[in-house]
Image (cartoon, rainbow, N blue to C red; front, side, top):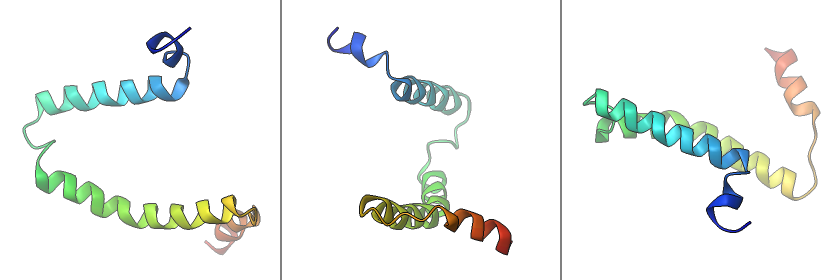
Length: 77
């Protein structure tokens, strides 16, 4: 198997294709979906989560992962 036939077997690719199709359908039905203001709002809301995720990725890559971080956050409220 080569090329596209091989890519179809990965779940991540299928999810990405479904996400693109849903985005295309929404943008066809709504004139405000792909506007600059809407995309900037999405990026602003996403930025804090992305910064925290990058920090956790660095911890995972260096092998210093501590799975109790999520439990401590849950207990702290």
